[in-house]
Length: 566
Image 1 (cartoon, helix red, strand yellow):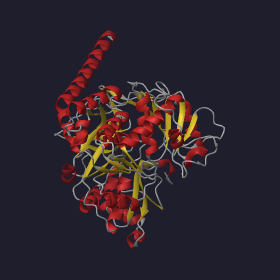
Image 2 (image 1 turned 90 degrees about the horizontal axis):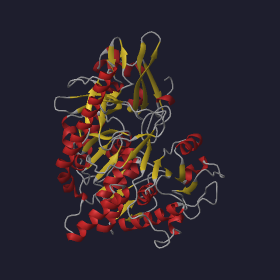
Image 3 (image 1 turned 60 degrees about the vertical axis):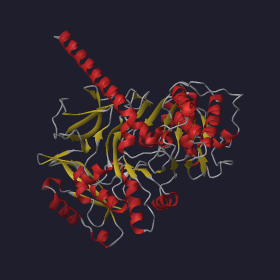
Image 4 (image 1 turned 90 degrees about the vertical axis):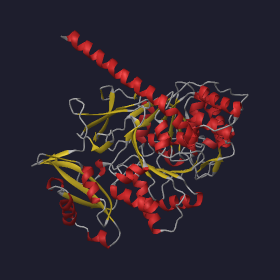
């Protein structure tokens, strides 16, 4: 009996490997030509230009180092970065990053050594990612919201050799910290940082004093180091997710066509770069030799001023950021006619927000669905979201998606269950053995519930653990949020199930009022009545709590543990 089970298991494993191989082969065969049309490769250039392309891939694979190196070859004078420090061309980004790489290598960094980065959006993160690609080191992107204890524990568990940390976070390390080299990232005065230890230099000082090419030779073909990203968990300890840049990023074919990328665009990125969503888009930006506008702190007024001033073509964002940006656009006089796409990820985008964006900016919104563990899973095109705002998207090439029940059985179309997916950009492993990958049918569980329709389109209902049963009926907090989002007077909200002694679970909502008469008029009873008019009785929240603001992390996700009465 046991032998039969083992044989069956091995046959299932072979089946899943075959499915993966077919998905990847098909993606390569059908997608590369499409991807090239987006402008990832410079047209023309003759034999020399093509040779530079081949050289860049042969040396650096598909790392951020490759994207920066090739962009500097073909568009050296184009502005690459606009941030709070200033502007840098692609030639300058490459030169700075190469110098940074030589300095890091001189410090002992290279294959098997880990660089940690704890910084807000700026060239600091860019230089670290690019330099990592030049020396073959590993890199860990840490959450700037980490406490001193969390920071030091993460560095210990990840065996960090060198940390690059913004000045404002440097006091989370003791002045006599000796476990790792410390480099200050952003500082108000890059020549005179205000850090606990005066011997800690800024990244700019490191670059300025870096050894020359003759003094420190970088590897001709660096190894491909790992990238560790901490999950944006809303509770508990974040999981350290280990990725490696894929040899052939097949999802690129759909990413750069379903989202209308083209060469040399002007891009605004408000999504946090320490998260997988931000990291992935940096590669796309540099691959297209685009100019990216970064700001360390999100300010919706500044964001709209940047759109107007720089004639931004694409916005990489999250719902919480674009919602605030929309309000500023609605109440101001800004020229946003240059916008060709807005692509959002990280949180569910409510239909009311989508309608507002379409009305203000036109049918430009795309949706990106994925996870820290799986990277990209599905994309909804602009025209698809206009037709069906609830759509998460279609699975991209090379990514397999299945809906399974709790026992691991594949569910038919339009039947909700747990979402599983896998592709070439799926994580390799968790950094800690305490975290385990949940794999069935050769696919990795995302942690959401949803369904595929007859056309293979994916719809997401919410986090799998968020669904509650009230009176024998399934209730999804997201459906309650969708109904309440357009209610006059509500600026922000969050819904979840909470424990109940009588019914085991009940729905509760937390609401931030608008600063207007409609917001002042909101009551528990009016909120309940609004839900009752639009949903079944079991979805009506038993509790309504009004707050000045919701506790959100830096990626915009609400932290339930910090909610009152939760």
